[in-house]
Image (cartoon, rainbow, N blue to C red; front, side, top):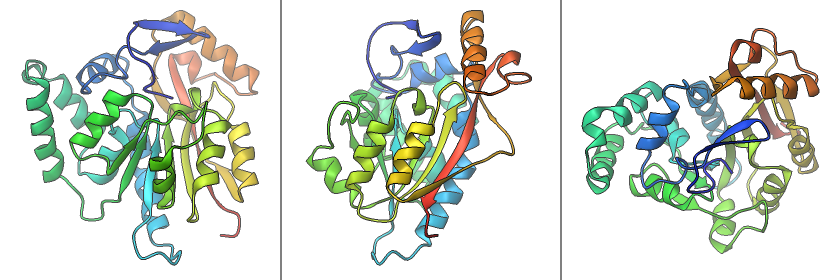
Length: 280
């Protein structure tokens, strides 16, 4: 999962850079410092899409009295939850966590200030959000500062949901994903959908370098119809080096895509998929 692993540096696996040393820190400062020069922006593009999907899913009467929860897969430090439920932008988060004053702050003081920061910007229509990521430090931070209502570190690539996640899945009505398509497979989605009890929707931003089709097939087997936004692609981040650019160009072409004007110009690009029950 995105956010998996601790230790190590910026390695390259299969041509794509990995940032395992920043995915599992006690707080997100190192993450934002590393991502800022690469102009990592996919959560910004996902923010309106996730807000729209969450509102539409909440408006669906599924016979349950409580609002359906959002489950953010590969949630890392709770960035999608922050953007979904608070009056902030991704640019605000970059500014906050890369500011010089923030760098010198003890982690406990930062967490206390972050609790106040997010509480003051909480939207009145905030949804319950659960986070799933094997990066225990990252999800602990997101839970501690109030971004997540519950956090789980189950690795569904290698096992089934534990009791806690299993209980939480009964409340999930929307599953979100940004970037994690490079880390999780159909196994994770099969495990999640086997455990849900409410009608579940999925909104996912997936790099053009990987195929989402195996996950689409799992979703279809659970009664979900997937629609691809064909109107555009969504820039994710700059490449770290020429080797990564060449990897992305080759991977996009291998999947039948055209990298001209996108990956050839120096950035990863994502596609947006939404899945809803076929009966809707």
